[in-house]
Structures are given as C-alpha cells and as structure tokens.
Image 1: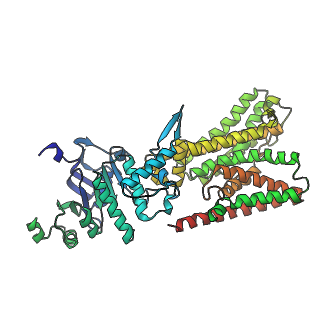
Image 2 (image 1 turned 90 degrees about the vertical axis):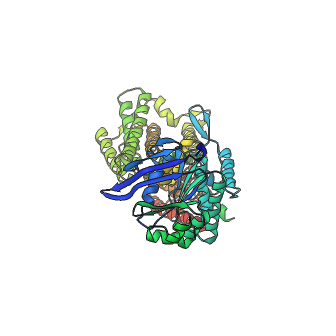
Image 3 (image 1 turned 60 degrees about the horizontal axis):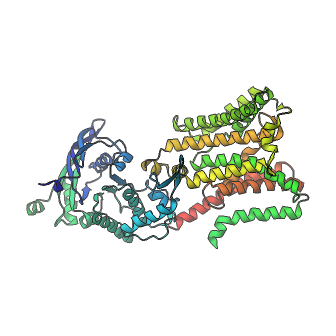
Length: 258
Length: 313
C-alpha cells in the first residue's frame, strides 16, 4: 500500500442520533480519488443523514472524518465547499432568474479592486462559466441566459460548474436524475462521467439502480443506519442491487462470486 | 419583437401618455411645468430607489414615508434651533439610516417578517414625528445653505436633478457593478441558494433595509429644503407613489426584477401622469385610484412575464 492508495476521505465510526434514535450508526467508509461511490438504501436507511454529515449540513454525534489525511470537521455546507467537498442540491442550489454566469459564481465572484470597492469582472465570469461548462461537455454559448430557460440536465451542469469553480475534489450528487426525463437523465449521466474523467471523486445517491450500475465504481448499501454492503460494482446487475437493498445483505451467490 | 414589447412595452406606453399630455393638457409642455415635474420626480425617485433596494433583497419596507417624515422634522427642528445646517442634514440622514438599521435588525435578528417589522417602525416613526412637532409644522426663513440643497443650481442645473442623477448612478453601480450588489440580488432571488454559496444573506438583508432608510432620509432632507419647512406627515403622499414607481418599473427594462432605470423612469411617468391629470381638471382623488390600478396591474403584468419565462423551460 502506497500513498496513492490512501483515501481522500475517510469516515470512522460515524453515528448520528436524533433524540435517542440512531439514524446512522458506526459507519466506516473510505473514499478514493476518482471513485464514483454510490450510496444506496431504502427510505429511512440513513442515506440522507450520512450525506448531511459528509456535506457539512449536520455534525455527527460520534465518529471522525479525515480529509486528505487530516482530521476535519465541517461547520457548514459552505465550510465543506471551501475544503473541497461540494454538494449539488436538487432544487435549492440555483437562482432561476439569474444568469448562468451569476449562478456559477454566486458567492465566489471574480472581481477587480477599485480602491475599497470590489467591481465584478463580468466578461471574465462569462468566459470562465463557459469554460467550466465545456469541461462538462456542455456547450452553452451565451452564459447570460437565465437558468430558468435551461433544460434540467443543463441546470445540473450549471450547479456542477459552481462546484468546479470552488475546485471541489469531492462532489456529492443527491438523486441527480430524480425529476428528469430520459434524455436529460442521459445528459446527467454524461456529466458524472465527465467529472470522473476530470479526476473528481463523486458520491452518488440514487434510487435508480440502472444509473448506479452504469456509473458507480463502488457501491455502499445502508440498512437501518448501518453499512451492510461495501464492494466494487463489477458484475453487479440492477437486480442484485435491489436485492441487497431489500434484504440488507449481499445475495449469497453474488457474495460468493466476488 | 416580443422581447422588445416585454421589456419596453410599458415604457413606450408611458412615453405615449406623456406625449398625449403635451398635446392635450393645457400648459403641460411649458418649461416651468416640466421642470416642476422633473423636480417632483427627484423626491419620488430617490425614495422609490430605496424601496427598490429593499425589494432587491426580497423585503418590503413599508416605513419609508413615515421614516422620511421623521427625518424631515428632525432636520427641521435643528434648523429651527439655529444649529448648523450640516448638522441638521446629518441628523436627517442619521434618523433614516438608524431606522433602516432597526428594520434590518428586526428582520434578521428577531426574525420578524419585514411586512410587520416595517409597519411597526412606521407607526413608531409617525408617533415620534408628531411628538417632536406637537402636531404642527416647522416653518421659517431657513438658511439658504440648507434650502439651496434643493432650490439651488450648480452650473445651471437644478440641484434636485443632480441629486437624482447621483442617487440613480450610485444605486445602479451598486447593483450592477459591485460584488455586494450581486450578492444582494442573489439573496433576494434565491436566499437558500445564496446562503449555501456562502453569502452572508443576513448582512445583505440588513444592508438593503438600511439603505432604504437612508434613501428615505435623503428624500426627507431634500423635501424639507425645498419648501423650507418640515411637517410630521410631509412624505405621506409619496408612499403609494413610491411603491407604484418600483412595481411599474418592474414591468420594464428587466421585467420581473426591481431595477433602477425602470424605477426612475416609472417615477417620472407617474409624476407626469399626476400633473397632467390635474392640468386637465381631474379631481385630486383620481390620482389615488390611478395609483391603485397601477400597483395591482403592474404586479399582475410582471408576474405573468415571470410565469411566461418559467414555462419556456
């Protein structure tokens, strides 16, 4: 084992309880650079609680996180973002009536100083926004367009571009295809592949087993707050995954094969 | 073609109406009358720009008129007391800024909705204004160094017009060119998204409401200087006008968004409309009815633009 194999993010014994009820319990997890890790589980299995902890929205009740070998605590989603862990929220993330460039650079505007005043560098923001989008293989020539005029897939690309703007190494996508049609889903899957090609690490939460099998390199299954499966995706079929989620364990035949 | 109508339809309608007055309203197109309309536009537009800044961060400031009246009588009291006019100006602006900050803190720290918070502030300011004046107006021969702020000219241009230009340019520059302005807009458009992006949304809300109060203070000082008197309800007539200017302004230039050129242009149209109606012999109360129709109509119209845009997805 060399340093290259050292995980970018490690969780040890992460637990979260709400008033005595354990939402997640003693989760150990290692995330490696370039992984696309799918976190699966039925409703109430603890996916959202785990994601809230990793994204900085909630502190764990117990356990530790290590980011790039250093112990880390996230005070807020923005704190996590600054440390390179970005979460793509479904509906909350974008200001629909603002332009693509304004959305990509929201809270992290490019400016020129004029004495004490920070003037917006709009031309550079427009050009850079276009560049981020093209890195995701999305071509929108006019980044002054309001986000509400974009397709669902293009909006996801805008939200991801904002993560790239912060140079996030780990990008958490919570049900990225949930509300999308077939073509837009294909666009979003392509976005995830582009991120992987760009050397980013992705955590994917999805109910869609076909998406998971198509994209993920590894899968973790949660059941009643505990990690019951953690394995490479190789050879798994959507049915195997559904089975794991419903039974809270690997299917014996698959387990034997792996 | 359609976007042009969306963006400039009501602006053209306003221009057409002003032209109609030029043709049909007796004495409307005289230099003296037009200058009066423009001067009156200055008070209204500056007050409305403040309301627009509050609306930019998605808060309503219903206290602007009462805050302006209190600012005016505070400045007036100091002038009457023979204090230095610059002190009176500072006091007037300070009252506006102070009450604006109070609104901002009530909304951000106490989490009172701005509709309620500013309504409360309005009542308090009105009470204080009547207390300060005991219900009468301060009137006197005020020093020209004070009245000149509004009545004077600089290089042949009315100072009121210059203040209007300055307020317009500053507000436009803040919103369009600065990082702070972009963050105010983001806060107003999508507070949750702005917060998740690390924008201090509370501070932006505080700033928007503080500026709204400050602009009310500026309006108050200019109003008092113009008539060299200060009464406890002197800005009351501008309240509905200011709201109508911002909302009507939202139907033009950048439909659906409070915007600076729209606000200023709508302020001019509204003042021209009020003036033209008077010249054509319309009764005083017609203006109120007109304002009500414009307020409701503007929101109905700009909301439809928003819906339309949303359905294009």
